Amino acid sequence: MTPVSYLRASSAADAIAKLASDGHRALGGGTNLVDLMRKGVEAPSVLVDVSGLPDAIEEAADGGMMIGAAARNSAVAAHPMIRTRYPMLARAILAGASTQIRNMATMGGNLLQRTRCLYFADAAGSRCNKRAPGSGCDARGGFVRYNAILGGSPACIAAHPSDMAVALVALDARVHLASAGGTRVVPLTEFYRLPGDTPELETVLEPGEMIVAIELPPSELAARSAYRKVRDRASYAFALVSVAAGIVLDGDRIVDVRLGLGGVAPKPWRAVKAEAALRGELATPQAFAAAAAAELADAAPLPGNAFKVALAQRTLVAVLTELSGVRA
Image 1 (tube, rainbow, N blue to C red):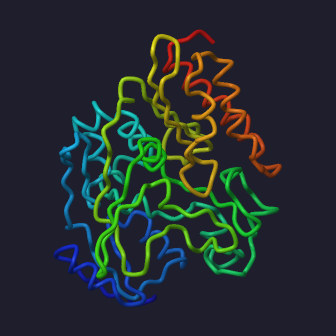
Image 2: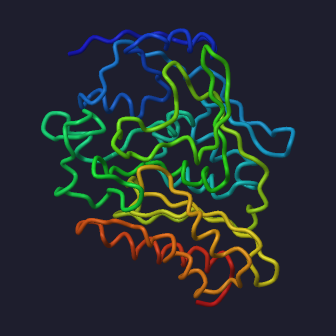
Image 3: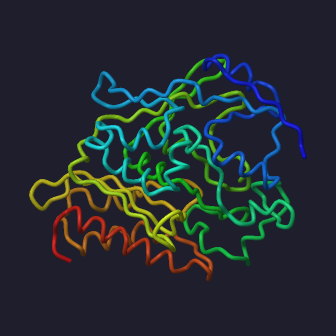
């Protein structure tokens, strides 16, 4: 057994001070970190409990929302203003994990959860460049049903597991970060790194820096938005493919659209090519199919997950068709 110490942070400043040393890790709900400690993937010397830090879910001055990083996933999904103004976010959270896990998991922790790649979790027997840089990637040539088809690299094809983050990138969410050097705000689309040849670097979070809040800007997409998750069983399974979508129509013409894809990339994937192809077009199944094909044109699947290309295209078309109310 590896000994580990426990400290409880009383404020964000106190947490930043306690996290400054090597081997100190933030503990929110512990739903991912503790699991990885049991598997030998993570081995912190000190756990700094940040679950008592701000968890408010409040309306911002611009009409958006500010959510404390320690807010529980279940509280966010059930909040009346989230359900009415950002229904795709509420649905995405409810599509993830079990009720018990959602009651424990925090917003900040959800954004920082690690991949569920089988070879990343197999610390005793598999090579993984994300877990041990330079060691190799056993996913290539292995079981890749849940791995990425977009944005991967020769070093890593792990997929990001969060449902919530897929909706947040589609909603143009921003993360508020704090460190001993000050604060900064980063669009969530720029928060995650693609693996390249340094897959161990998953975000732009600097050493000693932590997420303190998530900001949701005002959105006109609530009236027509949805989150759909395709998985191997009805509950408690990670996405093979997921789609977060919101659309604004003027008659049958698309004024604006926001699209996020999950289960297909090392980060929650903002489908900017599909969005660009759809703005100004008539809302038709043919236009949706062309946009989906444009987004997936750069997919680089392996034989074990090639089905995801067509699955992502079909799911994207189905969600947009339903939202738009057009006939297939």
